[in-house]
Length: 281
Image (cartoon, rainbow, N blue to C red; front, top):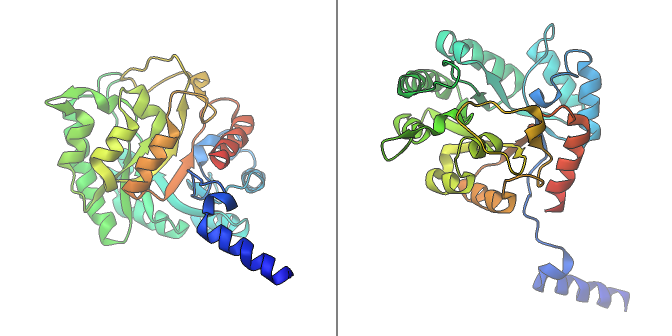
């Protein structure tokens, strides 16, 4: 009799999956950008990794703190069940020594390298800056691709200056070689700069490989500076982003790595709440 009930329950679960469980919207590992814990890592890198592990985070975007080799940092992460799919570099590193960036990424076991800022006069990002970035990204991205690393530019909001029939961000995507240059969408900075995350994901699809999960406080009107006060970075799901729609479009685009980045001054409180939001979707 017991076996009959088990078979019957299994049949119901297979025939009507909604009975067995709710359909999850967010189905990816929980990741975090190391910059979230910029105050903690320099003081106690091991303790910070322990805290990250306790939060249930299994993917990290970042690299070693000062005085620690990439190999040492990777070993500490591996011991805690944390992988490093992506790491970062500066624009200057891309321009001057992309091979050094490749070597560090490989030492960390990272498949992606992201750059999050293009040097320019404050509030003055323009076509000349975009064109220089296009040249540097294509050149460095080619070297990375030849060594099995995917380069991604992380948007920061100032790229949404109107240009021709779109924006400078459209221009950058269209003028970079898809074989060498991909993109990491930052949700907060996309909204802050006047972009629409869902529409961009639908328009450019798999040009986006990574995503920063951040939410912009309700009522905040953004601009093209790439800057906003820390208090405007809020717990996921409490701000302006439509995450269910964004995740649906991101899944179609093929994005597999998502990193919470909390730039508030309450990251130890906010990150667990953001994780609970993702798990509850």
